[in-house]
Length: 161
Ligand SMILES: CC(C)(COP(=O)(O)OP(=O)(O)OC[C@H]1O[C@@H](n2cnc3c(N)ncnc32)[C@H](O)[C@@H]1OP(=O)(O)O)[C@@H](O)C(=O)NCCC(=O)NCCS
Image (tube, rainbow, N blue to C red; front, side, top):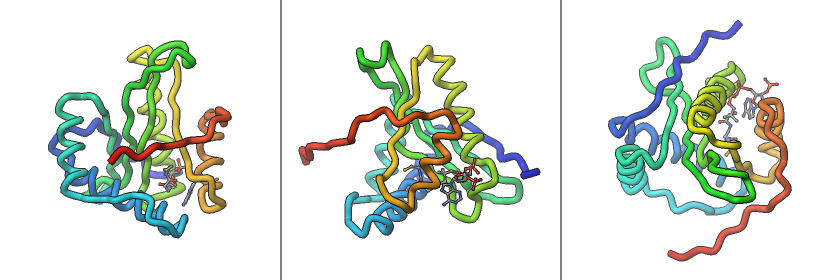
């Protein structure tokens, strides 16, 4: 039996640690893909996170582990609109558990909290994206076990900056 992590909703004061963990997540993805996909700027990320947490356009949940002063996991979510989704729904743009704390149920607890948050808002679904790489097959299995299904689309972007 694993020690349960404590999951709390983050506030603007947590922006620095959120930016730090987002940096770790992006570096892990770029190391797996062997490409510079993200221009991570910690100060700008922290300031954006602080703004979005203040105006509540974006929610973040932090997992804390007994005896560990810094949070060990992060899940962020924001409200999205799509007529195809039959209403408002939640998109998870960042989801990360520090490597030493994985496979102990922390990710599952973060998703459970995100589901409660989504249901309380009447959202019709949660959507997440994972890199299409063998290194992320574990993440796919994780999402599948949590009840997520592949929705069929491919993620595209048009850079405007
Ligand atoms: C996906 C992730 C958030 C899950 O968190 P977690 O705390 O390990 O999740 P749980 O302990 O609740 O579930 C463990 C399952 O996660 C999956 N998993 C995915 N990547 C893993 C990894 N690097 N190490 C351990 N488990 C991993 C495994 O399928 C594992 O199943 P198992 O118990 O049968 O081995 C975490 O592994 C992670 O941060 N991975 C790297 C970043 C990532 O993929 N983010 C999401 C998409 S961008």
